[in-house]
Image: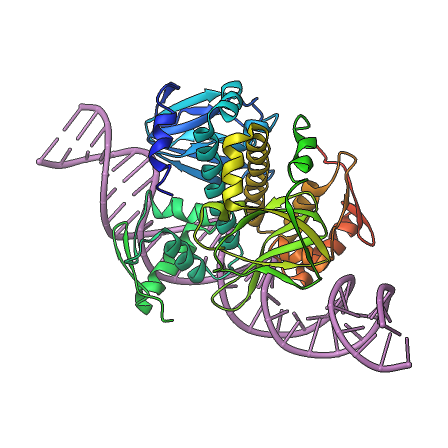
Length: 199
Length: 199
DNA sequence: CGTCACATTGATGCCTCTCAAAGCTTGTGG
DNA sequence: CCACAAGCTTTGAGAGGCATCAATGTGACG
């Protein structure tokens, strides 16, 4: 992980940059993909509207992540991209990406690694969504975000957290209250301390 | 998509091969990843056991797909791999993958494309899991698998289909019965004909 | 022809969604 | 510094839907 981790940023040093204000949109579903993006600072949200009008978060992009890779080979973007915070990002036009894949092996390796990582996270997310119990889903989601000491810090609000794991925010609050009552975790604003697993 | 699509198979022509009998396992969660795999024929299942003992399908691998890419940069496999049918697969040891990424730009491009595709599918899967209504979820899942004419062929049983979309098989059967009653679809064994979308 | 797994339908209970209301936090402007 | 607004947090009550258990039907395969 670390071996080429430092390289990623340098790979984007000479790329063009864009700034987004909070709430501003980078692209919408259906737009023709033009580039591969890398988020330097800020936070983005990739979301998608269902037929019934409800919105689901596909992915939250944090600083240091590349995104919209999936659209590199697609005809259309399949989600909307909106800035949750003031953000700065770099981008490489499609042709340049393909060119670099051919000429710069470090780039190919870094991109492959990034994709593999996101794929793993996406699959974990799917697995998470199949947990029916609200308590269990909240707990599992928090474990995934926690460090070795069992501490997790929420990047945003609990309401957002609820949307990310596919529960109503009421269900999350109730689950949190129960988990805290059980002694499974402790809350302090948006910092969470998980109790170690019994096994 | 097509540009390098034909190349994928040729990229695996000189790779070593393994045969798996039905029910045989390739690796288990926790094993150290050794290689990148490509499924030539057959069908595999990547699954994962939760703490409570229930099993969730992470991914069903069909002929022509690469898999276990996510483990290329991980220390451990994060799921079990089991053959659902007699299968033949090719594999490239980890070091050879990294080497090819550096020396063979076509390989880098094909692998990136494969990863991007699977990432998109994984995200669609997540979105699917967030649909509460069994009817809607079944219908949406079938639409994703259908061709332009609205025809979808199930690769396996409805029971498997139910597991893939995170519903009990009973709920799926009931949803199918209702959808057929509504006229939203028609079934013939494992062939499904969807009615065109109203909009 | 027996076995096994899939397919189908019924009844019941629990859990989460939804609607609702109130307290709490944060930010903004006068 | 206060007042107001907007959004997050929290708890309550009700209803609908899916999981679960259960039973039977239906192939497929040896």
